[in-house]
Image (cartoon, rainbow, N blue to C red):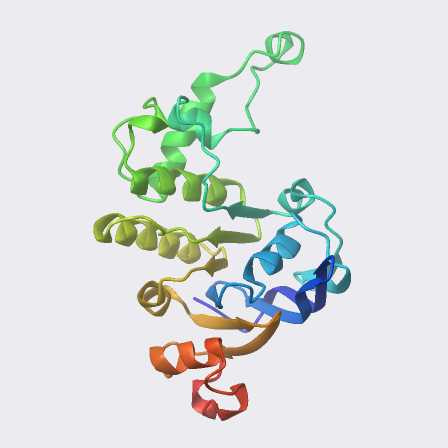
Length: 262
């Protein structure tokens, strides 16, 4: 359950690409144990924001804090080392490899002793066992961890990518359009998995254009507009139409009723 403790924060982020200003003094706050949806029109700065938060992009100005400590990410690996995992829209799964191999992609376990340290042999048995345990922990119903990912449905592939992020994240999971191009049943399956990730204590940043999904799953909604944070609203007290109006500029943030702010 979400608390008012801040898990991740950004102050005054600026990111420019030549003459284009993608982030123009953007602020951001993610609370511990919450699903925070980030919405905005194309060009609002959503992608630039999550890239700066994850280390995929270096801001030109501003500060990022993780659990109250200022951090300086120079690469996505820096973000990973600080316990931040990102699931991008393209998933970055290896279709021909098994589910277990995909869960440990880039983090393969070596056999103990000389077999691992010298011959660099993989500990496939342990990776398989841990994969089964982690997928069971998140209640992802897949028949065998030895299946190739290319044999899975789109929703199941997305679940593998989300489970991989949840398995290794220690602080934050960022998800970029996780239900895009999925049918209703598979989209709901992914939403349920995101809830389980949150319920395990990991705060989730969810970037999505799917407003019904946002209102179904988010604890709070961060509205990005013109490279800044326009408002943070409560999906239980604000209407979807008013949220879209703020997002598009048809409603000014100062006109949002106080009880709708979060």
